[in-house]
Length: 189
Image: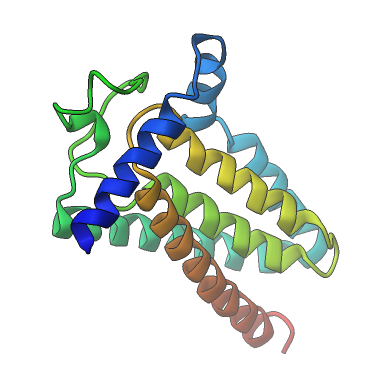
């Protein structure tokens, strides 16, 4: 059963990865770069400040730092635990795929980019939903694009992405709950 699932995962990876072309490589490399979306994070922090105030923003910064640390470290635990090689590290696949990332890395299950971007999207989207109703959908779409970029550049399988997005969504929701609790407890008391 697991072997069959991994076989389908590899086939889907090869299909999606080979949809890429040199024309779009620069765009997808920019999307997958960690610092590309710093301006988006700054805008989200500004919106949180604007709607909740400085005291709340300080709580949000701590909660977000804890959330990203949590998702990142749990991702590393899974990578070391499962030890599933990345597609770019598989000698049988390297001639069948497009590998354009700067580096490959050792293990890929599950994607840290996917979990971190989804956690940020869910957290910010839920916090700001009362003020910007459709923002969460934009952020979820952004997270999906970031996640797909990892397949495009050749460093993650679709299952790595799916599990990363799922874990990120759960984490984002849990830290949203923590953030709202802390705001009620220390700001709106």
